[in-house]
Image (cartoon, rainbow, N blue to C red; front, side):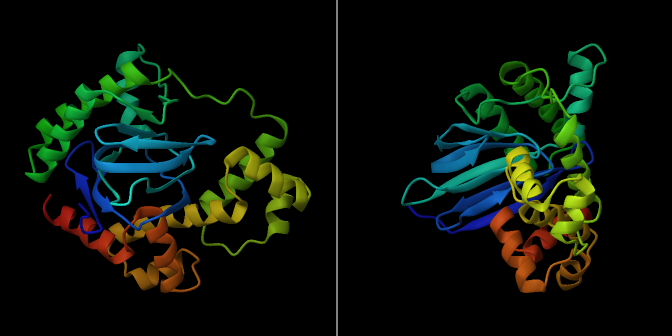
Length: 280
């Protein structure tokens, strides 16, 4: 049965805030985008088709979706009636204490090779977290549940690390351009300027950037702008001003990209984020 299309974002009362979402989609199609945090979600009904790590995947009811931080991915319905899911977005920093405990003080960021897993016990743990968020449970309870769940997820389904084997040569140069886009997302930088930062011709820069990061330079710039926009929206800055501050042409342009990446509008996202602050 088709349900109302929605995406309700909240920030959990744990570890200085972890974003969570309760969403139902039928027509929503997510363009290629990234999150600064991991995506860990449970499909509640229907099925989702999405791209990640060079392949397309389908996640059906009760399966768990795993997307690593900064993994390029998409999303759309795999069934006529759409799909519903609940997800959380812990950042790499949220895994720091866990990896320290697990690996004798070593700060090792987990990497999840599988995009879709079947783990009923873990799915039940995730649903318990989402249920406790709805009733605004205590910070101690929430952090205990999150910690136990992320421990189990890491032990069962992650590699010990996702460390690039080689960041020399062109990859190192490309990272300089990527870091510039991360640091100055609002800048109206030209292709020639980015290619110069990377020390490559414009032709080779475009090809190499897409090969290494699975996004065009412009596509990555949009994602960097959206990351900054989320931070400003949480500070209660008006969406129209956020659009300007982040380098979008206008609010309409900003809203279009925001909804294609997050499935909700900047205004709605901001209202939910501010509501969390008032309640904490």
